[in-house]
Amino acid sequence: MLSIALPKGRLGDKVYKLFADHGYPCAAMEQDDRRLVLRDEASGVQYLLVKPSDVAIYVEHGAADVGVVGKDVLLEGGNDVYELLDLGFGACNMCVAARVGFRENFSAPLRVATKYPNIAKQYYANNSREIEIIKLNGSIELAPILGLSDVIVDIVETGATLKQNHLEVTHTILPISARLIANKASMRFQAAAIQPLLTALTTQPMEGKNS
Image (tube, rainbow, N blue to C red; front, top):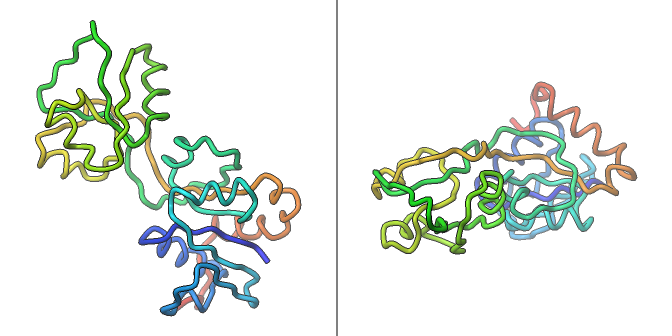
């Protein structure tokens, strides 16, 4: 049985529908079921419902054979997994943003507020810029407004929140989307189960499935 780690929430719902449409349904996933491990003997899969930031950890350590996770989580966590496929869901950008009209002082370290310190450090190291990281867990946009930081590094979808708070994107670091990942050992020992899934996800949905 193939173990698939899905992120809880809207992204997980979209990914499950994609899998079900391509021949990997699970009846319990479509019911009001509170279990976190849902099995479907007919399709030969079990779905593990986990916190989005934990998907790559479950896959890396072999608790799941494959999983779906945002590229931002992969880069920030540095998990030792195989990245198999860009699923295209949750498309957005990792960006640097600042107050409208902000002028950077290159004679001093740049104060960067972010939920993604590793991504921010790597980006500014590549640009030979000295920075001070301010790690936050929420309301990142508030940091430059209150003078806690000069800029923020965060995910930007529509940019509406930035605009409402008089912030603007100054640099785009990289595009972000949902990726199918696999455990390295599973790619050897569960290849007979993983390869058909990978092939199915790169073809048209199966007619009549999950309708």
